[in-house]
Amino acid sequence: LTTSLLTLSLTLPSDHRGVSSLRFTLTATPAEAGAGAEEEIHQQELSVLDINTHTNVIVAGLCRQASGDWSLRILKKPTRGFTYYDAIDDVTKCAAQLLGTEARAGRTLVADNADFVHLRKGELVFLPEDVLSVAVGLGWHAKGNLDLDASAAILGGAEPDGGITLLDTVWFYERESKLDAEFVRHSGDAARGTGGGGKGDDEVINVRLQRAP
Image (cartoon, rainbow, N blue to C red; front, side, top):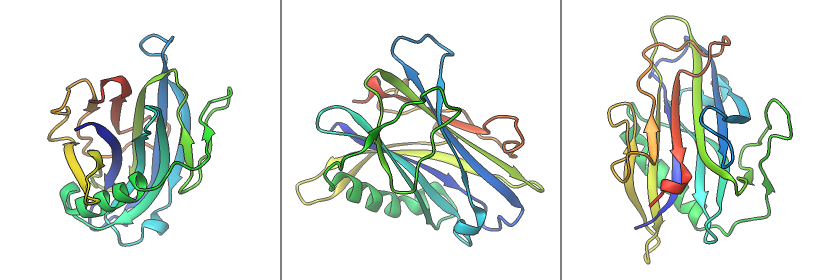
């Protein structure tokens, strides 16, 4: 089975009233750039008010088109669950909708020397052909000892019956993809958020697109 979609999720504590801000960033590495030359191409705040009482947010999906090109869709879909696996049904439903929809016209995501590019919820954009890797960073600023967790699901294409195959998951307990350790990597658990105050991302998920099976 080949990888068709990778979704990225954020799990919040059941009582997240102490979380004052959430942020995720997207960086990409062009083919001609060396290590450490990542370009930030998107940054966005997630409203705690929009999340309300939900405890999981499906942030975005990276989807491989039939042509082999990769596209990105910002989802920001709130779901429920105290662990990542509790929300897996909602993740697969999102995957089925994304994979079952023909790619609509979308712009190519480029930095254009800007600090970042603003994306709207539900917007579809295509990654430049020279992008080899993508890093999704999640940061939060919390009052008290609150823990949030970032995770990724790797899914295969739609089955003949319309179903979706879950190929692998990557989170802080399983930090490397079993399909290929270099394909998707998790930076590790951050017990307490420091992001949102200019200190960088708390947890980062790195995806090397060319290593996708």
